[in-house]
Image 1: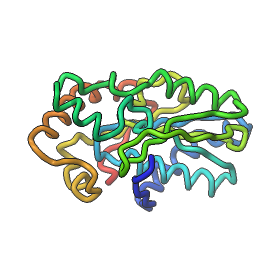
Image 2: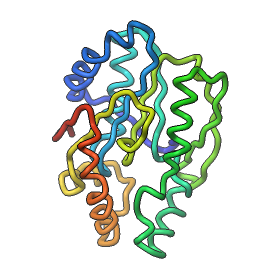
Image 3: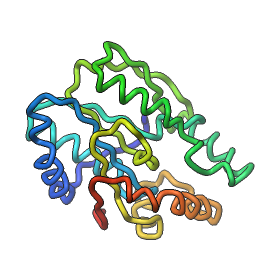
Length: 208
């Protein structure tokens, strides 16, 4: 997603080290792995995924690619928000093309020669295309709100922080509209996502 600012947070390294230790043999045996990171808005999904990405590359000397769930929304960000304003019942899993995301991860893991994927430009409110070459990579990470529902990831990490825990982080990143309607949206998402903890291989909390 174009428009997201990524920062490495050293406090994530403990989690990265635990994940790397758990999956190290698979990495070293050249098994192609996809790690999913999921959780609520502002919980630190993108930051944790970025830390994992950098730490795995640095420690194991292999190359990775990150899939962002935001790229797989059916509508660009502002259009999606307007659709929610039209009917708040539009909020939920159906806003995201999880089938396509799962398919792209499967093609990636199967060494597809060339893969065309969506790429959201947040500032321009557009969904463009990006070409990647899976054979150039050894592993992938996928981060997003509903990634625990994906079938293809080998290992899933769920961040348990709720939207009530992450308001400071959401204010800091300055990407979200913070009003009563947005809080209603986050409450709906919270009710959907909180049960996803049972789908995770690892859970973390209070990481930001």
